[in-house]
Structure formats: C-alpha cells, structure tokens
Image 1 (cartoon, one colour):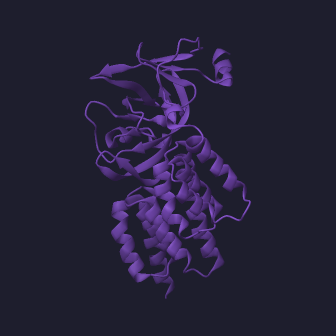
Image 2: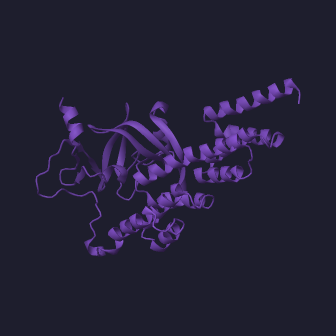
Image 3: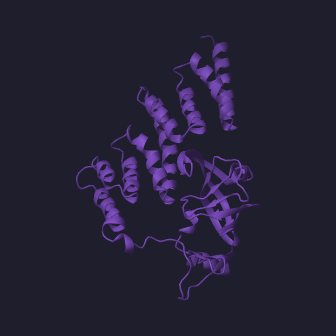
Length: 323
C-alpha cells in the first residue's frame, strides 16, 4: 500500500473516531461497516465496532462481540487493548448495579459475560450475589462451584443468602422498606416537601440548575428519567456507564445507565447518583421515577402523614453544613 493510500486510510479512520467522540453512533455504524469490509483485520476498527454495538444495542452484546474478537487476536498489544476496554466498560456497570441492588439487571448483564471467563472472580462474585439476593440458591451454588474449595466468597455468599431467606421466616423478615416514621424521636436534618396526585407521591429532583419532578417508586431499584428529561442534563454532569436490559410493566427493554453529578432533592445535596434513561421520550405529568437507590438509604424516611421525605445527614455532612 502506498504512503498516500495509508494516509487516506488513517484520515478515514480518524473521521470515524470523531463521530464516536461526538456520540453519533447511528451515523457511524454504516460507515464503520464499510471500513471493516475494506480492512477486516483492523483491530482498532473492530474495537470501535464493539463500542457501536454497546451504544446501539446493549453493553452485554458489545462485550460479547469484543470477547469473540479477543480470542482471535495474537499480538500482545492488541490483546491488552481489547481486554482493557472490556474490563473498563464492564466493571463500572457491575459496581453501579450492585450499589443500586438491582439484582435482576445485574444477573442479566453478567450471565452472558461469564461464559467467556468462567473462572473470573470479577464475574463470579456479582453473579452469585445477584442469584443469592434473588433467592435462587441452586443458581448461586452452580456459580460458586467455579471457585476453589475454601474460597472466601463461598461462605460469604451463602451467609448472605441464609440471612436474607433461610433463617428468618417470611412473615418476620425485616428487609428495610421506606415507611412512615415511628413515634420514637429521630433527628431530621432536611425535610423535602412532596406533592400528591391521585394517591401518588412526587418529589422535586434537580441536576445542576435543571429541575424535574419524579414519582416515588419503591418498585424501581434505580432512579430513572425520561428521554426528554435526560436531554436537559448538561453533558459535563453525566457519564455514560452502559446500556442494559431492564424489566418494565410491558416486558424487558433497553435503557442507558448514567452516573450523574450535582444532584439535589430539595435541600438534600447528593454528589453523584446512578440514573437510568427510560426508553420513552416523555412521561405523562412527571419526568421519571425516584427509585430505591435513593429511597432505601438508611437516612431516608417517607412521612406519608406530613407528605415529606425526612433526611438525616451523616455526622460529617452535618458538621460541614454547620461550619
């Protein structure tokens, strides 16, 4: 290949990378397909194809494509390039879904990936945990069976399942749910007024200077907003984590998962929060769902009598606020 041809090829690929940086994935997809038809062994272009699948289908589908690519590579630098991207994309999603206790979404995400790395503790641990918290002990044990005998995760995960489902009878289980506070005195640092319509509670929610109204939904693991609401969030205050499958009233759907900064619920400031972008442009009369990754925090109580969220700040936050 002549020098001029190589320069043109480099410029063509640079243009594809530019589309990726701009988030123009739908525009990029057919152009990249054409480029790969001409240069099927171009590893960076194949890596970019995995990213396109992540952004247009799901993260799991894109990572499966990259695992298939990884097993075809020979050059150490190419293997390192693709393996690093797989880990850097998968782990933040696993961490977010674990933190949000979104066990169904976590299991759905990890299940196809563990087929490619059946001995990887980075997949065994979250998948076994998800199965444990979904009360699927047989699936949990099958996953743990990939670990060496005596591995710390085996007893740790079994204990978590036992504490949640085996020891305490169903009627006495004390899994925490946000509820009306009892009569005991409790210190409340922030009170967030809720509004009520047709028997449902709505909370103020803001990201930077953008204000929204979210429906309180104890059935939603992760806070979620509509597509229109998402577009109002400044790009500098949102970080793309991945595209995952979620369960909705009408079945499974794809949703984008972001980490959002500079969040506030009334006067309650939250430095960062994981938020799903629902596969709908807009909702009727509100902007999204305030999920259990907010409502299930230990310092939050829903007072349905006064119509408020009561928040007790950690000691450090309280002292900083009083300085």
